[in-house]
Image (cartoon, rainbow, N blue to C red; front, side, top):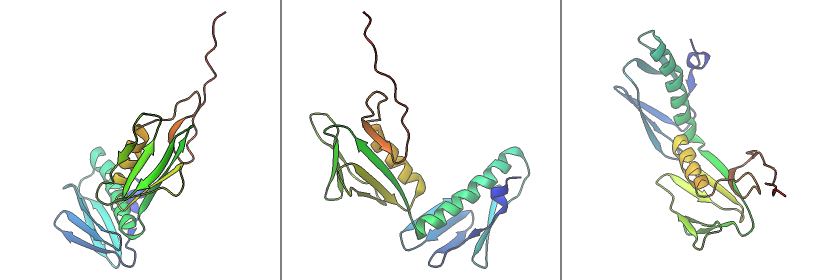
Amino acid sequence: MSRISKEVVKIEDGVTVEKEGKKLSFKGPLGELNLKLPREIEAEIKDGEIIVTKTKDNKRVNSLHGTYRSLINNCVIGVFKGYEKKLEVSGVGYRVKMSGDNLEMTLGWNHPVIVEPPEGIIFEAPDEVTITVKGFDKQKVGEVAAKIREYRKTEPYKGKGIKYEGEIVRRKSVKKAVA
C-alpha cells in the first residue's frame, strides 16, 4: 500500500470543503476547484481533515488511492496558497513584457508572440528575461507554462530560448567543419 495514501489531508483555515456524492468542492481565498472521485475511492471529512479510503483492493485501485489523495491535497493547497512556475528567457534580442494582462514575447521572429492568460491564470514579468505563471490549479499552471516554453525551447548549442527556472540544459560542442 502506498505511504502517501495513508496520510490524511489537513484542511487549512479559510478553506471549505464540501462533499456531494462523489464530488468534492474546495473553496478558498484564491478560487474554487472541483474534483470528482472514481467509484472505488471514498473521501471522508472529519475534524478539519480529509481521509481517503478505497473500497476494493487490486492493483488499479491501489494506484488510484495515492493519486487521488495527492490531487485532493493539491486542491487544498491551490485554493489557499496557489502555485507558480517561473520561466527564464535567454538569447540576444529575446525579451518579455506585459501589455495589459497579456504576455508579449519577442523571440527572434518578425512579429511578437502575444499570449492571453486563460481563466484562473495570472502572468507576471518582473524583468525582461523572467516570466512567472501563477494560479490556483496546479495542473493548469504547469500546462500554461509548458505551452509558453514550447514557443522557443532552449536549444543545446547556444542555450537560447525559454527554460524553467533552475533547469539545466546540456550543451553540445560546436559542429566542426571537415577539412
